[in-house]
Amino acid sequence: MADAVTKFYICPNCFLADTAPGQCPNCGHTRVECDPGNPDNPCRKPPMDAEGNITSRAPLWWLARSVPHLREKIRQMMNR
Image (cartoon, rainbow, N blue to C red; front, side, top):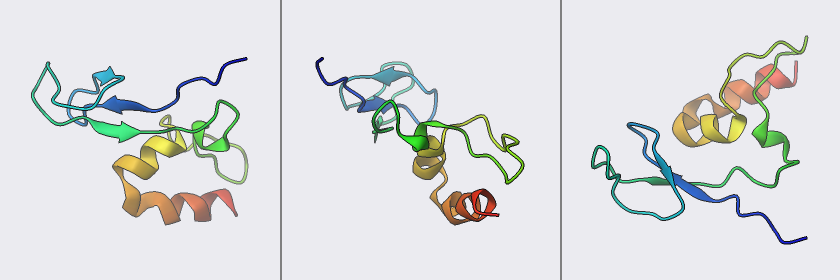
C-alpha cells in the first residue's frame, strides 16, 4: 500500500486548503504548512479531559499549530 500524503497547506484566515504552499487565491494570505501525522496518530483526535469529554472539536495537531500557547494546557488536561 502506498503511503498517504498527510502534509497540506491551509490558509489561516479562510481555511482554504491546498497541496501546495503559496498565497491563498481566496483571500491572499500565505498558506501555512500542516502535517497532522499518520492516520493512526493520536494527534488527529480532539483533546479530551480525564472523563473522556471532548474539550475542543479541533484536532490536536491544529491546536498545536494555530494556538501553540495552549499546547501545555491541553497536555495537562489530558494527563489528569
